[in-house]
Image 1 (cartoon, rainbow, N blue to C red):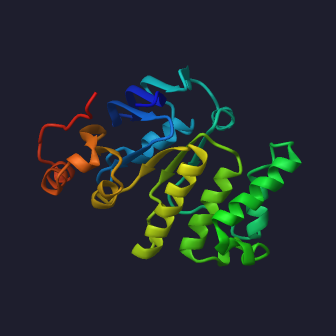
Image 2 (cartoon, one colour):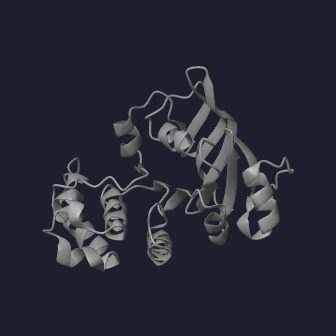
Length: 247
């Protein structure tokens, strides 16, 4: 197995007196996909926000390529190669598609590299090419999801954290989004942490899976080894023993 790019160790996050994450530990191996699922309020989005510096943990450690992320600003974390696509497809609606893409490269100074990345991403997302001058807010939901993925990739991340990529999308559009993510991972060696509320969709990815409930990992293991009944019981609250990934 590849070395872990991301290591979450005994992470606890509180909002006032409410504990959102309780001693959570997980790894994302270099170039791999980890699916994170669970019901509403399980702590999935809290983990994502902690990873990019939007939320400060109460205790525990977040390590990226062996280095602590503690105390770093979101900008510093992004500069180290972690990008997040938040839930809800946050495009800059009044800006054109091409300007949405250029915004993500404002800190870069390699003009040739920026131009090459634009060409590469437009080849991966061909539906954006004829819409470059169109206001991003006029795109369909699926097109906006593709745009925010492409925009995140303009920063050349090594880890892409994606919160609910299928939210509000038709199943066939969701399939296209996931197919594109697999293509990008194969081509660029990206590490992916994907939050997916649909446990069945998460299990269908055939990747390592962690199911959260009430801020804790109650089930984990290779998705191919977790049967549907076990997944459903864990999701809705049966205290079934967790499946652990083989060493």
